Length: 252
Image (cartoon, rainbow, N blue to C red; front, side, top):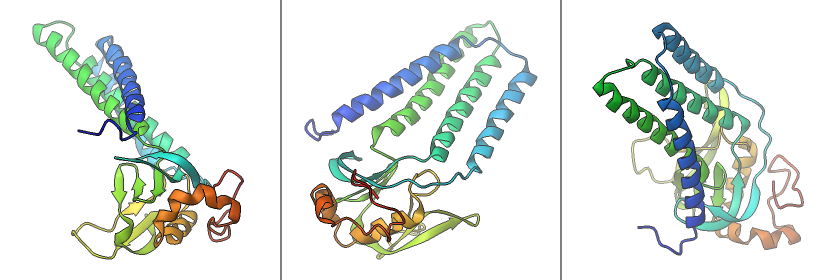
């Protein structure tokens, strides 16, 4: 069980509240969906799938910065460090996923007959199941501070946590001919899976700034916990190496 004093409970309660509200609203809406013609259901499903696929192919410009925060909520700890927000494309992807899930749930409910004993059982089960899945994704979105964080303990991208001690090389990662994140080649390969990738299209910070920040703190991650005090004496990462100008809020 999580410790009562780990500092994560306010964020957990916030995420649970967001998830519960999303699930209750969706479940209530699905229970009110009437029976609809099968052709209209098929059209709505294919449209939602098409919107999701098109959203994934949208690559807007990313020019965000890493900002220092005193309290970054991670997987199992709260600590200071640098955080990157979710990009516009990341928010669009999330919204498209929610829309597609809602449409699929409504399509399943709308395809049921209007009357029948088994319908009265299956309808609420479907509504609650789809709502619970949406609530789960809402919880995951609200649970952490930012989309990506660099802290003294680890690098976190969404729910993936990577240790600083097992990074051999930091190189840009390409997918379909586009820069899409930073690949962290491990010093010791502990599995046959490909090297992990952090950042990318769903993160507002571009690859050059993220690489510069990781390289700067790769061998001294403990300095991330003291960055607030170091902003006044110029110990922040050099702005030219980070691809941007440092602002007064302690960001780059």
